[in-house]
Length: 233
Image 1 (cartoon, rainbow, N blue to C red):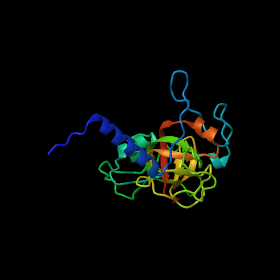
Image 2: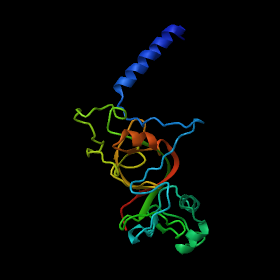
Image 3: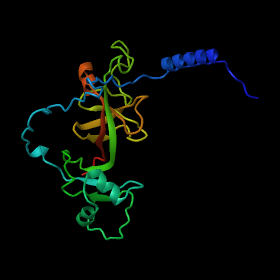
Image 4: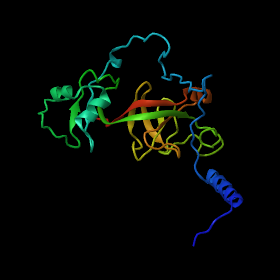
């Protein structure tokens, strides 16, 4: 039997449902994106210790590109790996001395040609286990992002139980990036997957910041390469 609900009742039910959901669900929202005069996102570069607007600073040996290797995952192909690192398939074949009929196996480690090995990773963090194209946003520990105030016992505490720290903490989808993973975010640097959020799903990543103004200025950055590291050298 089909039951038809009159439009006014439907609207009231929808309003009540949305109100209850907003009260019960955990809150973790990225801050609003400031818009320019043409309503496009005002993307502000954020990289601690890096002059985003000026000439590139000189680098020492610790900042030089490290040798990069990639750990093959289920479903990977040489074409997909080459595209992720911006190198040619034939170069992957040559560098790894692979026969033309080579079939990749899960867990196999491939050397990435120098053209694509431009990640600045510390020693001991040179094996990449996953490459993602992500959307980046920013959040804080305050009510504007988490709904918690400084008097709340859970204020500033991440999903992993650690205290959120700028320059280290990011929120991820744990179904895609395991909690505790170290990741390298292009243009940002190394971060630790320590937190989650109801709005953080798939390849989206929320970067923790202390300052609300800086978090708002960060805005939304799309199509950013993110490298999940295995921690092996």
